[in-house]
Image 1 (cartoon, rainbow, N blue to C red):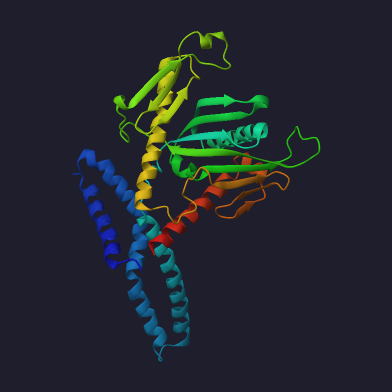
Image 2 (cartoon, rainbow, N blue to C red; image 1 turned 45 degrees about the horizontal axis):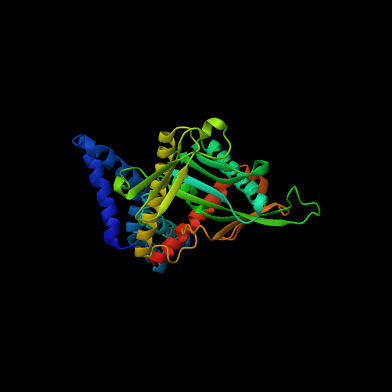
Length: 357
């Protein structure tokens, strides 16, 4: 049961905000903040009021059922209403508890996604490329803006590593459960005897940090410049345009050489470094609070095998929620991506609720 005082506070706060906003006397600086809070409470206040009146409504219906003088038709109606009341009570309770769960401040942020080929050689790099194309298609369908920050290609069109920025509404909350090891089982094009090979790629999704989220002192950075290598022609190697930025306190290091401009490479490198440092700090705080000690969904452990893409059987399976989808091709096309994310989000919420009890 949710404490009556908590329910009363929700209803009272909603009423107070409604009066403030209607008065027209709210400070301009606070108006947007109060409007947002009011909008959020609007989604829950009806359930809160119903939850608050449940006890009295139940007593009234039980009086009818326990009254020997009640006619049969009235008792039948009361029995039906009581059943509906109990069912609605459970739904309202769950809705309110979800609303009261601590919010992840990063959920509304943009995200950085890093994909790296793992075990499996060339086939792993081809799978990393397939994953990247999948996230590209999802971004396109959702009208998110994806920008490649760094890319390292392998032979035959594969990817050793790619880092991209994705911008839009609530990006991190939509993609955070993608972090982990993705495994593929299929027959490679180079396989002459039809044997199924297993390869893997690692995905890391980080909330994109702004300067206000994390202060990085210049004195904590060591910046080295060098000549870019790899494909790109002679012009790439004529100047020291590549940049390596090392955060001395943590030892985290980022190298960037995709651009011909040292300034642009440094800006991109700082963007990646800031996201990684922000995630490092978030992980430290989470460990201190032990928020994720029971959660299998929200751990974001990059070493955890989270999903298998089985091509011979046309199936994609998420191991955290034991959800098999026999629509592998559609999933890779981004068609049913939401179905997977909604299931993962729901399971994470259920785990969070069970931790409250």
